Length: 161
Length: 313
Image 1 (cartoon, rainbow over the protein chains, first blue to last red):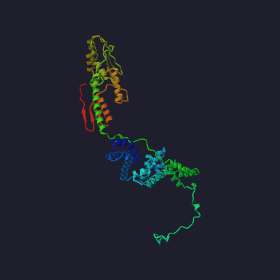
Image 2: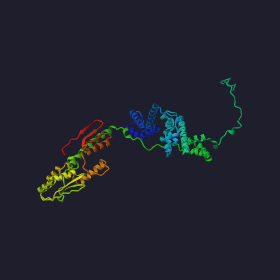
Image 3: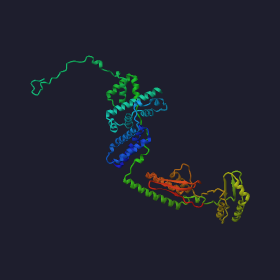
Image 4: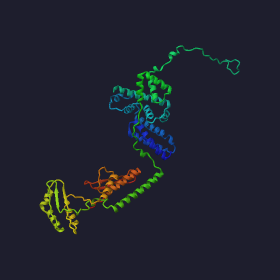
């Protein structure tokens, strides 16, 4: 990759990586740090990495950095551990997308990431698998599970409202 | 078994299937109407993910037409699609790297900018005197062409006006001096509250120069009379000053006041920061009276705090 291509990668992918990590971590500062670290790593390997794989490389690097942080902070939460009452009683949400993002926080990390990569970036199962290290079948199952979990949250909210 | 075949294994005994069919086979068959809720949910997600082949999609649509409950499940699943926010990473610019060519270009631009700034300063100093001013020159001139021949001292309340016609230069000095030097007058002025205003003008008498005595009078009573600033800049200078303040300094409020050297340097530093993505800082430090005490400069290579020389005002 040339310096020009590296800068193009900054222009084209920095926003997307940032949005993905921020939506997952719900922490703007941490997300910013991860984006910076990921591009710093890309810069260190700029000669070895081809521009055509730069996007998935960046997403993969950022994803694993995020997972490291989450593991360190023991923020991995199971579906059964989530507190739905807070979401259900919170009537401040008027926008469905906002409700979905709030509900997303309650998903386990692996379901959350694959749904985000699928919806935000439109990645295929294989591409998501390459980023997360999961098989295509696992990715597909996780996306389905994630969607059904989100649908259940929304269904409960709609019932309450 | 084929006994005649020399390659065949005599112990290879295979069971041949009987001609039998399950009679209740048709009972096992399903129709699209028999899809369960969980199957509809799965198919709805698959539809959302574009994972269904056309035949599956047709069957699902047929089921949905027949079952309103399934239709509501399908519709709710179609809503489960996250939309990314429109905002992006704010510090994207800082991630970018510059090529050698860009480095050379930027250094050249820096040099040119510095040269242009110096040239502008020199030209401004030569051709637009008064554009660059400092505190010492704020009371730079007094309009001596004003026709009224009065000398007055006025306050808000009560208003006390002393008016004396001036007949000649020496006489005017003596008489105005006499007014100010009256003991009761001095006491009266000091006792007054509120802002006071000192207005001085002189007669238009050809051949007589009032500049020196007039200015000396003002200076002698400066301790209780506020300084009045007279600005004799023309419309061109004012326009240049206002344009500089609006376009370069980015001031919201209109002002055509004289541009200070600090403001020019500050504009140059800000311009270079924008151009080269540098983070140089220039700050002015004021003393308790609001006068410029020192200038602080900071960059990645150098930082210093330079005191400003104070001259007698």
